[in-house]
Length: 314
Ligand code: LMR
Image (cartoon, rainbow, N blue to C red; front, side):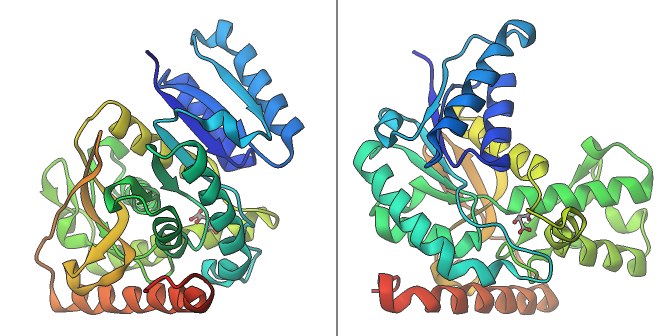
């Protein structure tokens, strides 16, 4: 039997996720949106690309949340994007309502699924989704680290003039401007990145990666990035559906790891059919530890905004 992935939100990120899931022939796809016609239309359009692209899948869409029944994974993309000059955290109040209401639907119709959170502020929305769903912590996962590392790897490859495929990198922290790329765990075909890039250039690349989302928001003027966010999400979908046991930076509930407790936070994880199967703790330098503490404080303060209404830490 084919796997099934439902995507809530048929905007640019949701529909691009559907596109890549289809082109990799990973699963049947259901696109759900309050604008049912948009979801239905995009699903039909994608379905009609099947004969050309050579995928045999069911791709459907609409506004009926019951259609997600039996999903292996539900990707949550719906929410307001930020505008130029805003931080992701500025979206917390508006997107919390949307997330909480969608997670109630997931709980009702796809209680055995794994939830992938994409909407911002991602770590806060993932913490909220975990709380509202009551799902075990391994089945709620935030997407941010794979995207941030993809940006970091792209900039490194461009600077070195080598293939992006040869850059291995790890990154910690919330999916915000305080995320912590880890040059000490970055290699180029196994060779430390510092062999190729001097420290000042490396710092500039780290800074650019940290602000990678804002750079695109400023360029687009309306909306935010979607190709790389969707590609990152689908890499996680593939790891789960194929039980690949990938080691990827994902946002998950921490209970003391890296000195963080009670919120979702990006760390290296082992991702397979069980969702987050393991959290991997690696030694950090004092500077990296300070970066993690700063990033964790930002996630915590964004979660604090929701405490009264959703009792996140209760
Ligand atoms: C991204 O990093 O592209 C997304 O989180 C969207 C944003 O607001 O930057």
